[in-house]
Image (cartoon, rainbow, N blue to C red; front, side, top):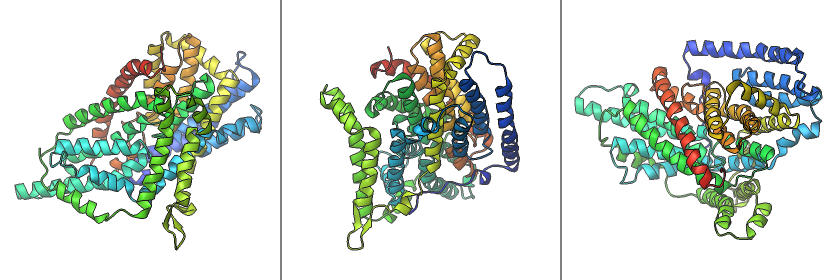
Length: 513
């Protein structure tokens, strides 16, 4: 089985929304270079020639990231090309971030996720949880368990893949509910109009995005923020250290999400008799464990073990921690797991292995380019002192003066940007600026940087905010007004919970004073 495909955005939007998207793309195509020229010809004596040129390129890039006239990854690549051609820096310096070790963390994780989808491990896990006696036929517990599965999957695979995989499972449960209600009432029930259907679909999208914050590899903004923090602040956030504050935060946010969706979309039935039978039937279709599934689980567990060993050594105060971190950084650990997939056989006689190169090439190469380009811009912003100038300018305008005041602004700035652009682009744009703003204010820049990183994953209001939103919107069960209502509430509540959670948890993780 191939990885679940994502429906094209044009197939999930109304005609009016498609017209808006067309004009957004067209306007951005011309507005980007125009704004770049305006910045280039502006009088900026406080900037060096390289910083001035970078400001023009960055302005152009930001507009194209927001309006998406061309693919985001190509915009990132174009910005790097312009930096070289227009003399901001040399080619080796500009393109060095494209080979950053974190790129290989992405690469290894993507291949592992592809293997899990290929061998249906994600579905097997999902149906196993849904069939637990503790879940039963309670619609409330079904909603909670469904959200937990989406969140857990998104900790290790992309939120888009997690939503796409859970989407048909949600459809099956909703149709089962409609059939049960029809039998009880003696009248046809339209599954498209069930409150529970709307809530379950929104849970699929929102829980996937929420779960992604729990691990460094859960969503691209996490790795982008971690890399920018290491590059600009010299602070290395280990895999286990990130999870020490992000996992509890994720759990709190999931509780908030469940209560919010349950109250906004209260199920028509308290108990859904027949859901257990549906899940059992689907689980039976998967059959016994195959060699491919076993190999993929083994490779995944090896990788996770390698990722958390540094945290265990730190807890034990072992002198081997630094040596291990040097020999087995997270990127190398991910590649170890990915390489195992190519040597663990599923049929030795036929020389068939867990994954082939043709299957591995289906990973999201565009994200690797987007990450590299964003890293290049972020690095150059600090090296040319452009970030410092932007930080002082924002400090003068905002008047922000405290670490946690700036952190709150960072979180909601990233949320606002992520509503109109991809979460990856949001992290690339907001994190460097917030680091610079905090440095200009003379406060600890780490909490604002982490706040902006998490806020970049928090776009829930619109179908275009993030692919999971588009997927569930395409079901026809989520009216745009319902998505906006739930999205606004979760944006606001989630942003405040992130801020409060970081205030309490970062000092415990040793990442704030």
